[in-house]
Length: 104
Image 1 (cartoon, one colour):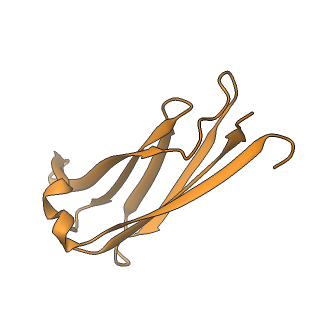
Image 2 (cartoon, one colour):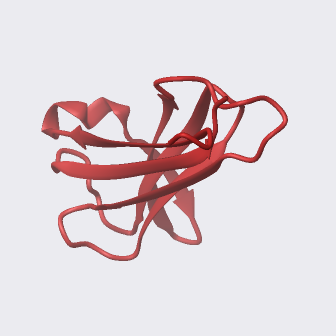
């Protein structure tokens, strides 16, 4: 935008070939399956400003599931998607990411 605000978005699609990327963690007698990642923004946001990041998605309609995005610096953010109690390894999964902030 002309006021220096940048909005960017991305959709990650993980197929069944991403089986080995899932991490299985025992939690309270069950298993939490998660897949960490990193999203590098197309242009760095301005240093010293706030960058808002958001994640959503769907793991084949299963619940409960989580979709997280954590601002790590002005060039990228860390991401995670996960499901509790359902072995989602091998499923097709979509993760939608959105970031907004000032870049100039």
